[in-house]
Amino acid sequence: MAVETDVLDELRRLRTRVPRLAGSLAATVDGLVLAHDVPDTEPEGLAALTAAALGVAHRMTDAAARGGFRELLVRGTQGYIATYAAGATAVLTLLADDRVNVGRLHLEGRRSGARIAELVDTRIGPGGGRHADRLATGEHPAPPPDPARRIGTLPVRTPQRPAPRPRPQPGG
Image (cartoon, rainbow, N blue to C red; front, side, top):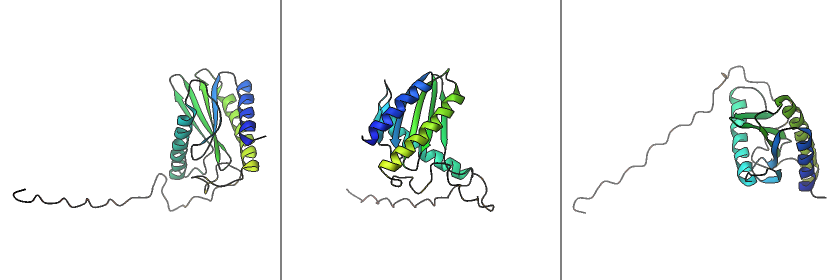
């Protein structure tokens, strides 16, 4: 049985365990769909947005010195979008109605993320992907924060000089 089929089975079981869960998607950290159960939503677009949000979440946890990424919760006027780490190479994104029990969503989302991590890591193998150098799960503690670094500081980029403009030629 392919890993995609096993992951899809886990997504379907998750939907039965969480009332008001509108959809779920498992993707690689690079934004490629592994499996999805998201009616009325384009899975490829959602996977790409999940990868972008994951990149921002990694930057936020680094900037705030809060360790490695574990989960992200976004609340809109019509519901929630929750993203959970699923090993070092995958993420789980859940779409839920606005009346969902958020505690239950977190509990089951974390469990399914761990299960998907097992499926992906045993069949595909750990590593790979844009964020493979970072641990997505909390299994291994992050290195202790540098006490000299202020919270919220990011690397500073030096602006480049603008390219010189060609001077207009007289008469032409």
